[in-house]
Length: 122
Ligand SMILES: [Zn+2]
Image 1 (spheres, protein in one colour):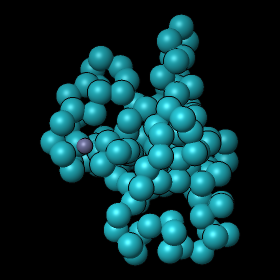
Image 2: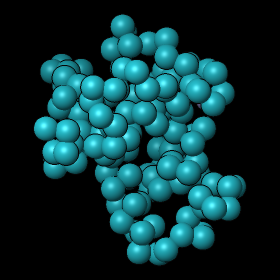
Image 3: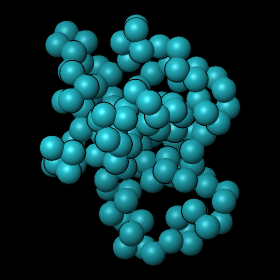
C-alpha cells in the first residue's frame, strides 16, 4: 500500500492494516464487490479478522483460516458455492500480492480488480 494510504485501522481489532495483502476491503474491491466510488469511505479490516471471507483463501501465505461462526462457516455451506467462492477469493488474494509486488510500475487503483469483476461499476 502506498505510504499515503497507511494509517487505516481495522474495524474489528483496531490495529493498523499495514499491507494491501492483509486488507479485506481491497480483497472485496479486487473481486468487484466494492463500488470504486465508495472505496475510500469504507472501513478497513484485516483478512484474519473476517474469517467469513478469508476462510475461502487457499494459499499458504495466509494459512488455514477457520470460521467459528456456524452460519458463515464453509463446512455448513453448499459445496458448489464453496468451490466457486474459494476459486474467486483465492484469485483475488493472489492479485493483492501481485499489486503489492508491483513496485517498479505501480498499478493505479482502477487497475486493481480482476478482469471482468468490476464491469458492473462501469
Ligand atoms: Zn484486525
